[in-house]
Image 1 (tube, rainbow, N blue to C red):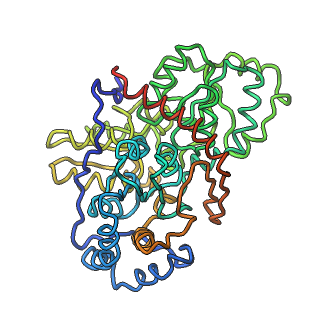
Image 2: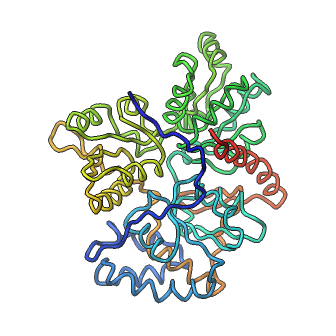
Image 3: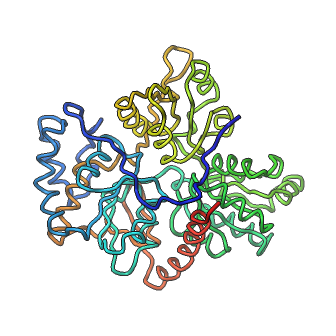
Length: 451
């Protein structure tokens, strides 16, 4: 019997301290970024970093302190540093060292609301996470991202210009019967689309609750993205497999035209309760059921992220968000052996902390022997945030010279390769905030409600 993350009856609104600490002699970053990957304002800081003799905490932290501590002293309690669990290298440990918070995407999005006294939020994560904070932030709160080109494969395969043609066709066919549920890993523009249809945002921890809510109202659900999370959550709330329809994702999804379909395909779409946008997480699709079975046969408790394909989730002992996975291990009794299927940097940090508690943690994909392909399983785009990015942004903020490209406003669209940005005018931002906030607040209302 597969167990799943169950929402608590009383919501813990705090960010739980991860417990991870910097260890001497452990390099802070696995790989240095090339100098030309930094924006021009950040290059002087990157040059200093790259000239350091090594990447050990004893060397890197004194260099960071020269810039970070004056900035934190300047802003005091008005500034909050944030990072996601999936951050590469030791950056999550560094953020906590300087008094920042590490959380999953749900708690990150809520920080401006939960801390109205904080006026500046500096996030080391991906752009959609920073934008979610900006959507819920007050007019006196500013949001910055250390690297605006830090993206997410899910969001990159579900850009508004890809999804809108599909949404327009579905709305044209089903009218008000259609509701859009936008995964947190989407832009503010898609969260606004969900709000305009009376829909909601969801995260990996609450997707089943949001789908159950929409289903109870008899709405046809367009879930954007991820196809695997949507399929797992749909099955969990009882939607039959033959009532789940997979729409192509990415550029292909944007090119789909219903008038080109055979009548049998259109009939299948009409019968569907749940239409899935066909994009996926590049990290979580590497996992296979045979990897899960390998560890279970050796006595390991196997827990995975619900962005994994459904056959993987079905055979695992449990599935849930990054917070669920972290707490599942941290709360396990001494002597436990747990295999975790999610992003590699996260599992490495988890393994270190679990060992201090007498718990063994392995990565589901790290199976020895030639019969299994080896995977790095790290989120490459999130790893674009490193010590020079954090140092540069905080120092430039202190000096009143923070680049505008690092400021995150609702509706911003950033190209992850070139750094090109499209920004809405004030009227467009106001309209987007109204609709996107509606979908986010509906998610919060449904999630925080007692089960």
